[in-house]
Image 1: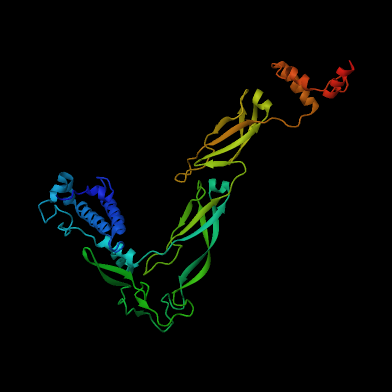
Image 2: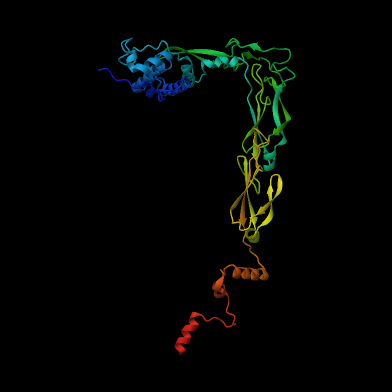
Length: 396
């Protein structure tokens, strides 16, 4: 009896609506895990590798996938021996070249077929720097200046890297292509693996006599000051991109970019969450009880706010439009939320204490007899201790 086959989607670990990119990624992971070269002598691994390859061959082909979705494995039975295992399955319509270029590149330290594009113009690497700004500068934006070491074409050799009077030569190993092709045998036949030329490092040129100023690199480093415009509303950890202020491009490609990460210093009063600002403002008991006008600090300066009579502690106040501007539209701002906290006085004069006692008597006498029991006896006599009372009992 023929061995029943697993569902192809289950084999690759994807859903039935997976797109081509998801299928390719899933197959690449399974193929690398169970490839015979990674598991020599492991029959079970080889079986799973062939199973995954068969699944990908079907699901990566639109017509075969349509037939499989409609009829299942029966769509391919009765053909080229497909009903009994993997040996007779037709892989002719599947393109494994880019996938196995990647797999063999990982296994043997090379690149993939996509590496052939390396000879074309390529953008240079980005440079990363950081700058520290204040809370207010993050809210309203600012201008900063940073120092960056940039590479410029060597003026002595005009960027060729060769000693003046000489020229770079075509690399004999790769013939000026910058890449070498290695042929390897796989389960599916011959696979070409493309690697960067080890002699010219992908440039296609060999410099016999190097320029003394740039040591053959074609570039000299210079320290430069770059102006950075920090936009209003930027948050801690975000970056500002300055185009073409990074490393030089390769083969005539454009420069990379300068990425400036912004570090915002803490503020002693304000805290930020997205576009909103939060702070706490202390008020006195009198201000909370009978109401008063108070001044609240914001990033725009102080604003006058009227505390309503009977305000409780932890009351939240919203100051609309006093928050952080949006990065997309600086005319749109968040809000400033203020928490009013009633402060209890710690150092009161005798006169202030008496005034509070009179106030308490008028508003419910909450101090009551508790204050009297806690006070010292007014007779001036020394309060008797426990041993004194025991002694009196024996004397009687």
